[in-house]
Amino acid sequence: MKMVHKAAEVGSPLIFLSTHKSLLDGILLPFVLLSQGLGVLRVAWDPCTCSPALRALLRNLGGLFLPAEASLSLDSPEGALARAVAGAAVEQLLLSGQPLLIFLEEAPGAPGPRLSALGQAWLGLVVQAVQAGVIPDVTLVPVAIAYDLVPDSPGDVHHAPAPLGLWTGALAVLWRLRSYWGCNRKVCVRVHLAQPFSLQEYTTNARSCWGDRQTLEHLLQPIVLGHCTSVPDTEKEQEWTPVTGPLLALGEEDRLLVRRLSRHILNASVASSAVMSTAIMATLLLFKHRKGVALSQLLGDFSWLTEEMLLRGFDVGFSGQLRSLVQHALSLLRAHVVLLRLHQGDLVVVPRPGPGLVHLARLSTELLPAFLSEAVGACAVRGLLAGRVPPEGPWELHGVELLSQRELYHQVLLLLHLLPRDLLLLQPCQSSYCYCQEVLDRLIQCGLLVAEETGSSRAACDTGRQRLSAKLLWRLSGDFSDSDSDDFEEAQGRCFRLSEQSRCPDFFIFLCRLLRPLLKAFAQAAAFLRQGQLPDTESGYVEQLFKFLQTSAQEDGLFEYADPKLAMSAVWTFRDLGVLQQTPGPAGPQLSLSPEFASQDSQDKLEQFIRQFVCS
Image (tube, rainbow, N blue to C red):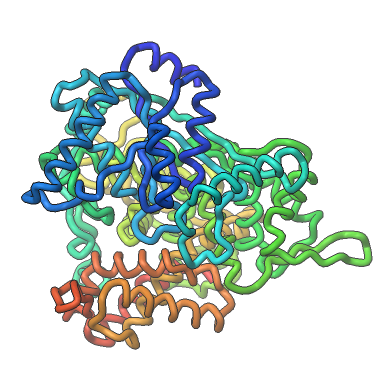
């Protein structure tokens, strides 16, 4: 907060760009920031999340709503007029120095990509005003908001919540105040502000790191089908957020700037977000103690996972005595857990089987940013070992296998390209090869990988100076020499093996399971290609796949992947991969199987490629 106050003293308008966890965020955040002396915020609202009555009230209170006509085509007079009015409003707002709050994530429960098209439209208007010289600069402040229990969370997680009405919003606020005063269970919310930065400074620095990108179809499809084995030395191009009228009105370079700026800010917001006790509890119950756990052991695991979060530089949104924290988290999750009392006085906590596990899986994604590098690395190692030793084999057998650094990088790159960018949230300036280096470093730091010493003069665990191609070279900190004396083949020839420490098997499986819901949904989507009814519209095929996921979940008991958002993510990934192709139809665009994946053999290769990363 001190940095934000210092940035406000400079005189540039403050633009707060926030995550979006609840429909009440637009009401709560202005009060929180006003209480900290940052003035009255103007909030850019999504009209779809508000009832007409609430929309009229918020507009009178200073809320901003983008006209629906602003999304019309560029040659539409109504669209041009609406965009001009919205742009003039933003310019006047910036000239007056009033702070503005924009949500960069879609409303909670909304189907579609994570990045909000509306949020990018508002940010594009701000960028346009600065580029036109209306105002010299603005200060961008990433904001993260986290709840241990989202106030408007629907009972049915498969459907988006209804638009927030005037009375429902007031009742929700009063109900939470009543909870705070002790008449009901207390719910905690944490708001975090990341490092403010200048838009002009970001614009100057960002353009220098824009490189060429290729589609997922060109990067991954030849490897899936076995046509080649090497991954091209380029980045993945994947944009799921639709481009609306306000962005189309910008130049191509400015549109790219807004997209990458949005991802950069969302990355900073998520990295600074607090992890709540319910997210830690849901993760433990779903991925570590699926069949139940004694409360005494759950206390120890809760403490362990909290320490792991703090060691990775992530904040937690709770404090107090350990037993009270665990009891509080269980009380908030009581609809999804079963408590069994033993004769010895201890309790056994069992996650309630059924579709409610989807709720626990969604809560567990709050921990994924802290463990994402290790989870990607663990799944990549799992894929390497899948063809060598039985997945259920003893850990000692896994530890015998040597894993070369070249193989590890290759496998991590394959998984990185498969995973959606909305999940990874890599910074636009961070290359996939640099991320591979980070993954390997994390696996060594957490003790899962042990370097196999060779006869080389350099220790095998020295990962500071190596490169993957002629374009990339990692050097020790402070070494700016232009020497090319490093032996590339030597660096790529280094080997590692899995550690034989007693804690490693459980931690390795835990990391792999963090990505299991998504990867399992992708694998089931590949299996569904044999029986899906195509051609069909995108929404129709997503509905088909979701019903198949529900049926499969009933059979194997892993309900956490029966999520409509995962079904949609799988369909979009397969479309990018060239498995599904989009063709025009009488009722709109139709999805059909591409010729490359029309055969049973190609579909089997795709499913096998995905299942190598899936942990049981």
